[in-house]
Image (cartoon, rainbow, N blue to C red; front, side, top):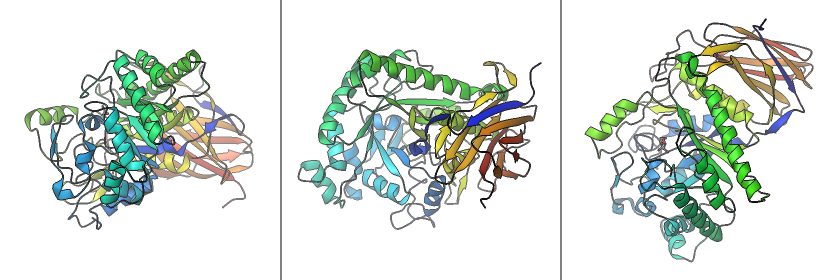
Length: 509
Ligand code: AHR
């Protein structure tokens, strides 16, 4: 008979890999109200002397985001970076062809670098390989990272930034396989252009780390041949390949929606295999790692946005991609974080897309009001806070749950992270069963004598509960009922819940 409880074994020595903190990255694109009205809003009561919103900065710092990708996204494929620097009143307005809006360039590259410093984060810059190419990527890199004495680095100094920005992470274009991308390419065209651009960029600054564009998602017709073919060109010059994936509950079938983290898992495994295939073919010693630099739930705003872009083009910072997230969205985001942690050996960077207003954990009121936390803010916050250390591989036997599109899947998904600096262990576990609570029995080898320090759970009777500027219906609740006896942890995972169980040595406060 199938067991109705989940049984897990974790061992201090069953190590997946150290968690790279860069997996808790995020993304700001010049899109909708992400920049204007989001992170930058001169005149707002919360604006600082540079026009950056202090309330938003506080929330970004609270989330602990180590890296933020910029300026796109689809936007980058038609972006002229020079338009966005220098005296603000001399910057041209441009048509943004990705989102059919008007880009004023009031906020640009140097402002973003200043903002990132205040947000305690690093910049991951994307270059335009849609309408532009090698020369412009090199000019941009010189502007950002070269000390001075040449045209573009001197331009930066003249613009008030004496010291180089020293941007370490660079994306070679964005979603270049997608027919929606301005200047999209075949895999051969992209592979050659990316390799040539990468080679030239590393001549300027060999210390940078480069991300080659992978497929726009795991359902693209050219996936995974795109990965194999493009990497054959770029292997010698790049450090990462990108993965992008969004999920939505278009069918209104929550049980199936919650199984999408299994698709994410399969996607990661396939891209890893493509990287290793190319490494073997090249007889290479370098391992290509994964930059999952766009991931989230995204579907609530799609239809409205398509109509707005079609019917009301060339507006400045219109509200676009403003998904209002529900409790069930937060559950899937929590599961996706577990998936990223379970692949800590290969996923070394990841960006929740995006950060503010646009498919984002942080929203700002459109009429000069406050900033507030969406439902998905909380799983990200807790994973970023307690998911640092060494990811441990759980052996897990879970009851199954039937889904319409994924067959019978494990109801419980989990991972454990050991923080060696505090010697604490955190178990992240989701119960995807919408009907049944599931008792979890976990043997935590090497953690005998630990006690439950904190048991936080995201749970809600209403799967569609949302947060708003007026109040939070979805936030973690503290549970009192998890117990540790010797090496055995017992906790009941409530139906449809995402859980964080923190354990520490018994004698520790
Ligand atoms: O994040 C929103 C968009 O999704 C990005 O601009 C693009 O890269 C992806 O398709």
